[in-house]
Image 1 (cartoon, rainbow over the protein chains, first blue to last red):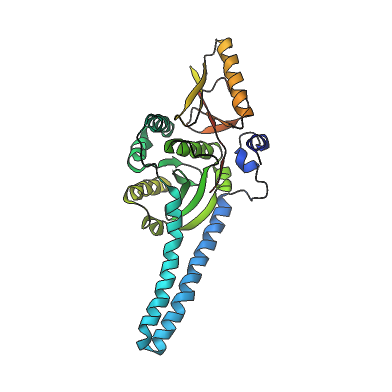
Image 2: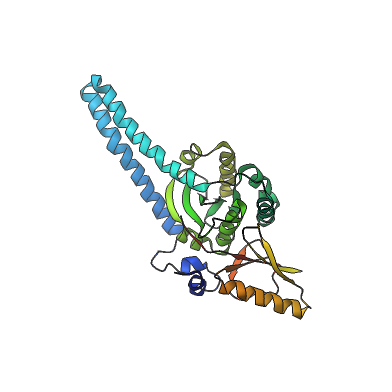
Length: 221
Length: 74
């Protein structure tokens, strides 16, 4: 669908890109809760699939410990890879040299407001409070920390044609779309992980970890 | 003073600015706004509470209207 028809598809006040995808079920509090449960079941399934045979083998023959360890290691690697995908998609703002990068960062700083500006400078991520929880927005992804702060949902989402945009402009695009329609934003974005916040934290760079901590605080308040 | 800006490779470009009593500047802003929409850009008006609203007509009472490109799932 072309960009003009995307705009035409938008209902008043909703996200145009979401309205242009009528086949996709609109994200909501309920759908996110359901997706979270599915991810938990999936993770439990992995633990069971790899953990049970490893335990059984060890019980039958303790000398087969190395094989059990390989089994268990494989399961842990799968559990490790899932949040890693979520962490990688986020892509904080990195290099900020050049006039365009500074101009874009200045506008983004104005958009996020005083409280989140320092966090943006430190982590390259924009923090935003929403109805579904607290969001951290990067260049090509976003993290939603659900209310209570224990669960995160990771989304892969980007500007359609962003090749020539400064990094901060990409974040500004996503932030504006999020503010326009939070549920629509979560509908357009592709999911790549949902699970415990600590699992994601382990995969994030240090600067992003502190941003995740701030988002958790916001989600709890 | 209200502003219409476009997010682009320069960081952003100010397309128009207008004030409540200046009808000529408002007309210029509306024209610039429609031109951007025709080129496939989407418009986002920043509201006083910090939220944003997708708009198809230029809200003359908004302080800042940002033209952005469509987003997509990665």
